[in-house]
Image (cartoon, rainbow, N blue to C red):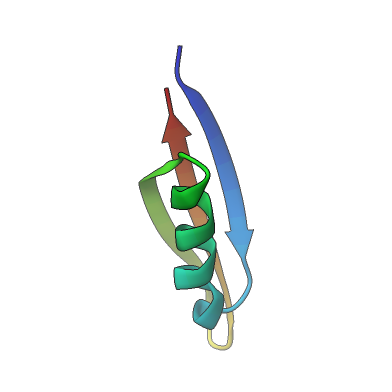
Length: 50
């Protein structure tokens, strides 16, 4: 059975760090989405494993 985990990242400079951390824990990036307007952009990363 697959597990899913959604992570919210508030600044684009942290995205690579978050992805690397989760890959080392056995997660795979499934979906990435950014939403917002102007300087208020929020990034959502959906990871899966199993």
